[in-house]
Length: 138
Length: 305
Image 1 (spheres, chains in turn red, cyan):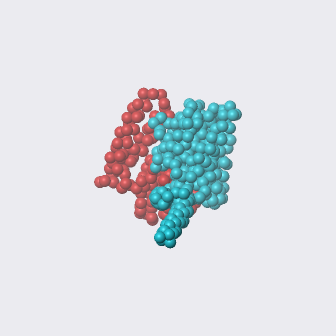
Image 2 (cartoon, chains in turn orange, purple; image 1 turned 45 degrees about the horizontal axis):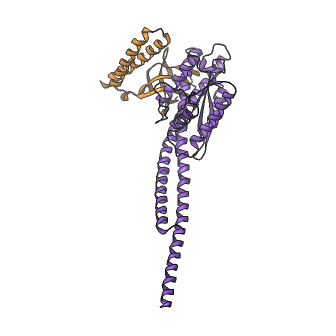
Image 3 (cartoon, rainbow over the protein chains, first blue to last red; image 1 turned 120 degrees about the vertical axis):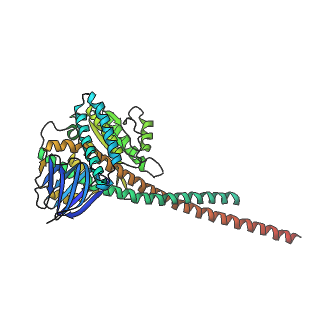
């Protein structure tokens, strides 16, 4: 009982291996990809993908602005950014969050609702990133 | 007849040219391997994206109100042409081909009375079009029209610019002209329509790039669930697709540039070798003739005495 999981960033294929289960951070809640899942296309929020071997998490990746395609024996994740958890840097994350908050302040003065929503999404991603980076350190 | 000294100087100069061209060939070969690998590694992302978009389009059908990025503005008046070349020359006909192909397209559109904008990527085509059509060249603010090291950020910058033009109704149709990387020897100037997104056309385009798609089309039959709604997914996917298409064209341009340079430098090295052979033959003959001459003089002098 395993599926072929592939995590692909625009630069290269990051992961390509068999796993028993992968938990994906769906936009509307986490979803586990297992063998025999109904074919599905899923948007992802910024979050962590956990790779399972039996009951154990074997590996975890942070993904951002991604989506996934599930098939019965295969799951492909495309994401703009894919990072191993220990590659996350607290410094970059907090700087990014600060930058985003700054641009949000500017944007909230205008009427561009679309842009504001985008920024809120990105800020959310950056916060998750920061949180993860800090927790890994400990 | 050139003197021996002149000939020697010329042989030496060709020799040093040969050294340079053969070094450039080696460098290009090494860079090409890397560039080609990058291009190949980026391919799965583009193909999967393509597959998902085809799926989405099927499930959405031809309903009105599709996003501009997919369906265009419905008009055909303002064309944005994006020629992609390398930043540096000495790559045979690589950049010339792109510039000529793009020029042909631009002339045709202008003749039809369309409004044309050119946003070159790659310094060589930027310089060319700045000279040919100074009024038509546009580009993102702060952009330098360079291909550089081909980062996703560059693709992102260009894509945001295209989106902005589209939003402001400053552009109806967008096409990329780039060198498709067939192999080291062969790069084919290709038109890649970005807006409106012609999935059938891009699909064919992908097929020539990647035969794997044949396998993928079989899997297309599956009915997909979407979460969230297909419209929402489409809304998120299209901007990404634009970036990925640009990025993969840029990667291919990069690989192609190195390939073209390698081929060009290889033949330059070979020509230099031939030139050296010819000059050396000439040099030796002249030297021999001089010796014979001197001998004749000495002997006739001795006879006279």
